[in-house]
Amino acid sequence: MAHHMHHSKSTRNLAEWLSYIESLHPKSIAMGLDRVKQMIDRLKLHPKFTIITVAGTNGKGSTCAMLEQIYTNAGYQVGCYTSPHLLRYNERVRINKQEANDEAICAAFAAVDAARADTASLDANGDAIALTYFEVGTLAAVWHFMQTGVDVAILEIGLGGRLDAVNAFEPDCSIVTSVDLDHQEYLGDTRESIGFEKAGIYRTSVTAICGDTNPPLSLVTFAHEVKANLKLVQHDFNFTVDGVDSWRYSAGEVDFQLPRPALKGAYQLNNAACAVSAVESLQSSLPVSSDQIASAMLQVSLAGRFQTVSTSPEVILDVAHNPHAARALAENLNVSRASQGQTVAVFAMLADKDMQGVVHAVKDEIDLWYIAGIDNVRGASVEELLAIVSEVDPNARIKTFQNANIAYEQACIDVSENDKIVVFGSFYTVASVMQKL
Image (cartoon, rainbow, N blue to C red; front, side, top):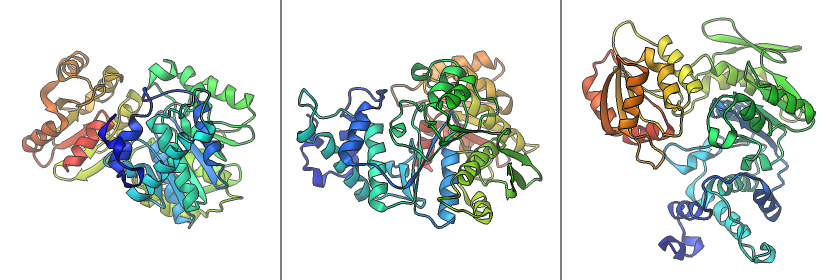
C-alpha cells in the first residue's frame, strides 16, 4: 500500500492523485470501452454540449488548438481535452484556453474515483472498476466540462480511435487528421489496419472528416458502412495556397480567404482545413463568422509544434516522433534555413518508435547530432541511437550525452548566433528541455 493512499481523499493534492490513478490498473493501456461506458452511466456523463472528437497519427493537437481558438474567439464556452502534457497535467484540461486549476482537477478525480468504487454497483466479485490513467483522465475532463457548463468540448483521442476512452462519448463531429504508422503494437502495422482503428470514431449520420490526402480504403469503407457523412480533404472540401500569407477554404457554395495559421508548416493547412470543415458542419448549432475563423488562424499557438523559443541562435522545439512528423519537421527546417550557419539536433527517442525512419526523414537538414538517452523505461539508449544514426547517415557528426538537458546545454555552448538548435524525437525530449528553459 503506497503511502499516498492513506491521505483522506479531500486533502490529496494533484501530485498525490496522479500517482494514485497511475496505480489503479496493472496496464497503462487496456483496450476496450466496457469499463468506461459503465462509468459514464454511473457518473451520468451524458452531456448536452456539442462534442468534436479528433484522432490522427499527427496533427491532432494542432487541429484541437485551432478549433479551441476559433470557438473561443466566437464567444463560446469551450472545453478542450488533449494529451500528453509537456510540463503540467493541467495542460490537458482547458476552458477557453485556460488550464483547469489543481482544485478543479482533484474534484473531478474524486468524483470519478467515488463512482469507480461505488459499492451499490460493484461487479460480481465486489471489485471496483479498474481504470487506466488515461480513462480516469478522460472521464474527469468530461465531468469537469459538465460542471463548468461548456457549449462545445473538443476531445483528442489518446491512441487509435475505436477503443480509445474518448470514443465512449458520442460526437457531433469526428475528425481524423492523418493516418500513418505509429503505435503498431496496438494498432497493427499497416496504414489499412491503422485507418480502420481511427475510423472507429465515425458515427452514423454524423460528419466524419478526413484530412489525409491519401485516405486508407479501410477508413473510407468503414465510413460508408456506418453511413457517416464523410468529408474528404481535396475532395469534399479544399484548401489552396493563394499567397505567402493566405489560403482559401472552399466546400460547395462556401469559399473564403484566410490568413496562414500562426502554427508553422505546410501540413498545418491540412489541419486548418479540417478544423474549418468541422466548424462549417456545426454552423446550425454553433454559428461562427469567417472573421472569427480568420482571427483565430493568426492567434493559434501550441507548445512544442515547431516552436521557436529563442533567436540567435534559433532554438526550435518539435515533438515529432514518427517518420511522417519528421518529414514535416525536415520541410520546415528547409524552409527556414538561413544560408549560413549549422543545424544541431538535440535528439532522443523512445525505443518502440521507428528511429531509423525518423533519422532518415531529417538527416539532410542536420549538420551535427547531439544524441541523448531518455530517463524512461521505454527510452532508447545512447548506444542504440548512436548505432542507428551512424547506420542511416554514415557521414554524420555525432556527440553523445547522458540526457537531453546536458546535450542542449552543450549545444548552446558550441553554436554561434547564426546556427540553429532543433530539439526533437519525443514529447519527453522536448519536455525536459522546456523544463530547463
